[in-house]
Every structure is written in structure tokens, then in C-alpha cells.
Amino acid sequence: MGWNSRESYGKSVSEADIRANAQWMAQHLKSYGWQYIVVDSGWYVTSHSAGSNAANAQFSMDAYGRFTPSANSFPSAAQGASFEPLAGYVHSLGLKFGIHILRGIPKEAVQKNLLIANSSFHAADAANTSDTCPWNPFNYGVDAGKPAAQAYYDALAQLYAGWGVDFLKVDCIADHPYKGDDIRMIRQALDKTGRPIVLSLSPGPAALEKAGEMSKYAQMWRISDDVWDLWHSDKQFPSGIENQFARAAKWAGFSSPGHWPDADMLPIGRLEPVAGWEKPRASRLTRNEQRTQFTLWSIFRSPLMMGGNLTLCDEWTEALLTNAEVLAVNQHSTGNHAVLTTDRAAVWLAHQQPGEAHYLALFNLENVARTLHYSWKELGLPEANYHPRDLWEHKDLPAVDSLTVTLGPHAAMLYKLSTR
Image (cartoon, rainbow, N blue to C red):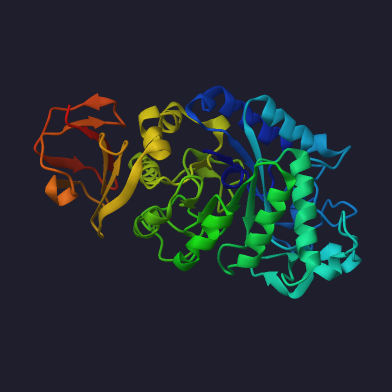
């Protein structure tokens, strides 16, 4: 559970922005379990005016070919070329600190053939110059068959551990293209530091047949390309909320403690001042759609990474993020699975604990209001008079021997069912 800078600040995020959002999280969200503050892409770019993923971008880099925080965006890094001061501030609030990187080694480091820290290798020894990320020109890939490649990832991990990094999001690695060797090498490098660092893999859609490998090395991996504030998309990028229902249904069985398929960020609240995609705006998702996204992410047990600007949260958005009963479903439920997924509706079931209460999520995927009716047997539950509790509204409802509910367009309900 955390916040990522990309959806509200793009590649222009500053130290002041990170500190302000961290402070807001500490004051408003920490007590509910939110803890990660993640600086997304561009923190090492010194020439933001060049534009995102610009081939002529200029960088802050140390003598060993490792990107360092740009002092014009992160003033506290000016003296030591380090995120240690900012990470220290985040830690002082009782939170955890994360950064985004691209797999591979900077082209500039290879062109200058810089020494790799703590080794006898140079950058050219590690690089595969025929391999680049298809949508970002900054790095070459590494040659996984060479010891220099592991040495470079080891050097990165040592640097980040020294900064106090708790969360590492690695991009251009989980799909288009999938890079299993890089995932393995990065995990090994992180483990060598002795510091517990979450490994997050992007972008998706990750392949189901790679689930075992990703689960072995990473804590979270994306099941789709970037999700934005759209209900439905006919493209891989951007993806919409409705598109995630079928994907989540396929991936639910691969969740396990400490290893989670990731449905991507929550583009809710206000995506400004510099949205990571398109113009700054309030989320285009309706309130029904925002609640539906949060409900699906919770019953699927996806990581929860808020994308909206925390400092601009209104009362309604804060209430969405701080519903302890809904968050308990995300954090503590078991046996999570889709009972049905159609073009019209979806139903998910989970359990509080084996033998205890059940959690039931119902979704109207249509553009008009719809009444859903199910017997308990249709939902895979024993016949009984269940007492539903509406977790979003914190209301206990009368006992029923079947379920009938009317949902507005793209709306959801989340119940706790008990036989007390």
C-alpha cells in the first residue's frame, strides 16, 4: 500500500512534491497501513524540457555509470548525489521509500566505458548494445551471460541500499520484452545487500506461464499495461478498469503471501499538476467507477498504489482510501477468486479466514443500472440465512436466504457475510 508519483507529476516530480505527499500520507493514511512513497521515472534527468523519454536527455550520473538524483529537482541530493537525505525524511515519518529504474545500463556509461563499482569490469563489458527498451532510449540491455552484468546490478543494489531504498520498481522487464535473466540478477543483487527491498516489475501484461519465475524473485508484477482513468479501452495502452476483470480472474490463483499480481495504480482523485498521461485533470472515473476499481483491487488482493495527488485529496477520496473494513479484505482475506465474469457483471468471493465469514463483491459492468439476483448455491456458498454487512457504508443488513441487489452504472457492492 503506497503512493507513486507518476500519475500526478509525470517525470517532473520534485523533492518538495515528494516531501509534501509523504507528509500527507503520514498524517492521513499511515494509520490505515499505507506506507510506501515511490519516486517514479525521471529522477535522474537534468533536462526535463527535453520531454519524456527524449533521446537527447541529459542525466546526473556518478563515476561508476549509475544514475543519481538530479540536483535541480532534488536539492538535498546536491552535495552527495544521493537520495539518502530524502529517504531519511520519509523514514522519519514512519514510512518507506522507493524509486523507479529501467533495466540495463546507461548508454552514456557504456560510451564512456566507465568502471563498474567494486569490480574490475567496465560498462562495455556488461552491455548488450543490440538490446534497448522499445519505448525508452536511455539504457542498453545487459548481457546476462557475462559476470560484468551481475556486477553492474550488484553495484546498483549496493548504492540503493546505502540510500535507504525499500522499494524498487524496475521497468521494461515484465513484458514487451520479458527479461527473466534480469529479474533473477536484480533479485540476487538486492539480496546481497542484506536490506529487505521490495521488487516490483513493470509493465504488463505479464505472461501467466512466467508466474512461477516472477513469484520466485519479485514481490509484485504487473498483469496489464498502464491503467489510466478510463472505464474501457480497446488498446493495450492505456488500459481501463473494466479490462482488468478478466485479467484479475486469470491471475487470482497465483497470489501468495509476499508475492502479488499487480493490477497497477489507482488513478483516482486529482491527476495534477503534471499528469503522467494526457492533460492534468480530476480523474475521469465516476465515483461509482473509482469505488469499483478499489473494490476489485481489494478482493483480488492487488497491491494498492495511489496515483492521485495526495495533497489535493478531497474528503470523499480520503474516505475511499481509509475504509478500514475494505482494506482488511485487501490485506487479510483468503481464497480470493472470481465466481463469474461476463460482459454484464462480475462476482468475486473470498473468506475472512477459513471457517469464518465470507466476503462477496458484486459488480455491474453495464452502462445502465442493473438488478442482480443470485442464490447462495450459485455463488458457491452453503445454503443459509446470511447477515450481510455493507463494508462501504458500514451497515448491517437483515438476514437473507438469497441475494438481490440493484447497482448503478459501473457500480460495486462489497459485503461481509456471516451466519451469526
